[in-house]
Length: 254
Image 1 (cartoon, one colour):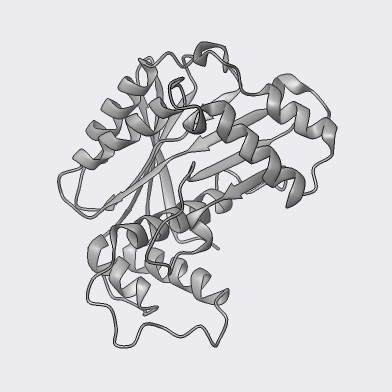
Image 2: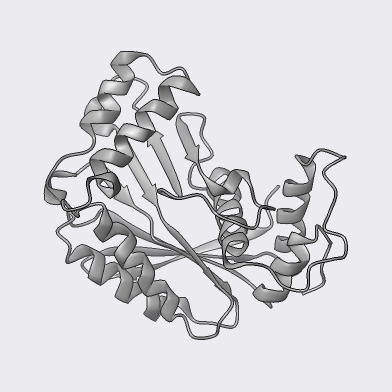
């Protein structure tokens, strides 16, 4: 059972913002997240001692990615046919973050209809500030995929790394890897089967719709196909305090 609800806010001509909030409240959502994280921790992996009074930006991002994965796996991508490739979500209690695309999700149509195949690219930003200007960094995250001057940051480089992960960790056969490869095209406008999921983890006291509408508008200007952008807003009350308590592996009353 999950502890959040979702509503959808249309952004005319571009797509939708999926707004996730705690249900019945943020306390229930926080408890659901921390219980999921603690369930997988080795009993000898001790919590910080003395407890952390603050956390690094890297750990804030790691926890944000873990929260995003838990939400996605429980809602949008709950079916077994969706395959996740994770980065820093796997190390939520580490102080530093990994480089690369935050989360990628692969869907290959089980009936072999390649037109239905999809690659979801999810970049995530986490901020406890009332001002959501940090959301603008998501624009650059997707722009990097199209930067031909830095090949190691390009979409082709990221899909190459994804293929390695799928082959070595998930044991994808070559035929499936070819289908994944075909999802990425050199020109953004040709990437009709890619979906972009710019995601903002923020304090529930902030209003994300204006910020994420701007992000979606600017990303579409990069040349991606119409209808390929789906923004996510995930909020917890008193986010900064909640993340510190989460990093200390404590239950927390929001």
